[in-house]
Image 1 (cartoon, chains in turn brown, cyan, purple, orange):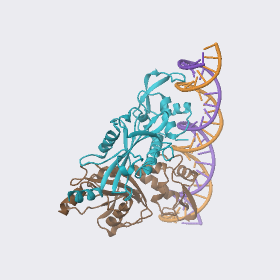
Image 2 (image 1 turned 90 degrees about the vertical axis):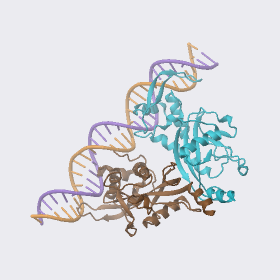
Image 3 (image 1 turned 30 degrees about the horizontal axis):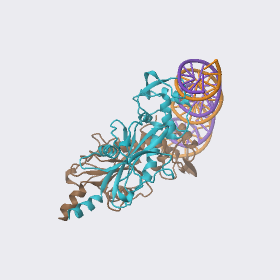
Image 4 (image 1 turned 120 degrees about the horizontal axis):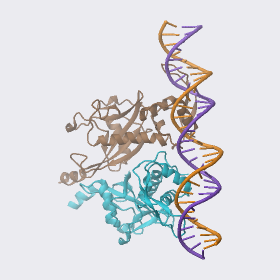
Length: 234
Length: 234
DNA sequence: GCCTGTTTGAGTCACTCTGACCGTAACTGG
DNA sequence: CCAGTTACGGTCAGAGTGACTCAAACAGGC
């Protein structure tokens, strides 16, 4: 009786959190996906997601999803709500309202300890070279990528992709990876340095990469949240 | 037994939709609020909200909340998701996850047929002259107002506040009401007219207001969604 | 060591956009 | 008829941007 009375009713209005975690690796924007252990979804990939527990905030659920499904504990990573997907038929079995989150982090965590989680090149998602997505996650993923692209324009969020200290070349590589364009190094420098509190000099120089080049100054994140005026993508 | 077994479990994961409907009246930004019929909330005001039904999309719930609680049926009004509020203790009794919506509409609907619904000046909300808000709606309302202010900058959404045909003076009054500033009429005209497809001329002239003035040309909404470059608030 | 290629950092120039401002047109109310 | 108000068009200086050049400082190959 308890099983009949509680479980179906609860499933009919379940709330879940799905996290689109973006990072940058080898100059490319990558997205974390996991293989659901549901047999009906074999071969498909999904955003890491968990049901919201009683007495658990949505943010906590997002962190728990990343931790339990990919072994990623990034309390300092940027985490923001994306939007909520609640179409009645988005889940084949139950009515699940999903609160989607967007997470940004530097490429440091190795989810290899969880063999059902891996990063995918965002350019491959939606093509034959990429994964096929479960549920309605093919709607959430483009929204997440577009949100990230848009937020780079008018916020200082690009620094969430790099570790401190960083060079302006590394920060420029973030913009180029997320936007998929090439930016003029000189104009980018002028814009970033002239925006108050976007970045602050950390002192010292970074070693050049294998291809050579003049050593670059090192910077840390500044206190600015928004960019005035915005850095518009070409 | 049925009451005990279903209601508490279902309430523990209930999903609701709350709508922040903004409009402009007498040159001021106003917000629709309703008096909940819950005795425990007597004297407080709340955003119109309803529980999400099975087989009902979130957008449908938003429209139903406006209709049932304020008699407003505005299928053409702008409606977009704001964000989802899911703190475990945001509702005193149950765990209710609320998907907040932002709605923008011209001041045409008269919610007077519902005597528990009225528009409040957004400048008064949060002051002694304004209403005291129920639940955590004092968190949602500022987010809604800030979203509207921000969206006017980089989208053509200001036209959602006026009825067609409109004059550039009326459109400028929208920006001035939402942003709470005075804008230079000439510069505003130059910006709006030079932005492709923001507005299109409708032909004819509008009668001047009671204070006189030269008759203004009439315009309709254009096809543009975003403003490039943005119209930044001073 | 020397040359080539690369990246950083700094600067120039033309163009666009913006804010502040001015003048005229066309109406209302007294 | 006059004063006040709004609409519309224009000018001007300053800020911001894209395209570009040049020198500084490194790595790697010969």
